[in-house]
Length: 218
Image (cartoon, rainbow, N blue to C red):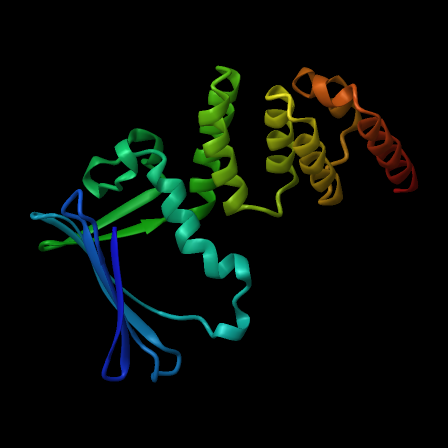
């Protein structure tokens, strides 16, 4: 991997390329415009490239999660492609309603529906979990968690994953986050066989008691 960053007049330009394939790219930022703009390209092969442009949101309005979102989207998408190399013209059927491709001459624009991407990686993670392919399931479920960290459902399912992997400590952390973010189904929690390794933990039943009190007060 070779990443180069340098200044060009009034713009900051970032270029990158990879030694083991023909992929390369460039992004240029006009940091003096208000709001600042950016343009760039991603060369996938000799005959395929993607060009993009955009306007940056005001920096003070961006949360850390928003700043990291492009990387998280790219990482989630790459899970569906062989060797993690995203090829717009070789999109798997799983992403048919996630990615919209618009072509203009040799240029290819790719739009990603982030909510549907979240659903796709979440569902694939659950499918792999059901097949007891825990390591692969973890990749997809953690990608879903990165895309939607405020969802109690994904935290609950990650807790189930850790329970099945017999990692009680991490499972309880995720379960506590799920409850803090609004998960309230005590019956499901106490009867879910995926959580059996957590159900043998005293902390689990302390959490159940807290949920019962909270549900009663509501």
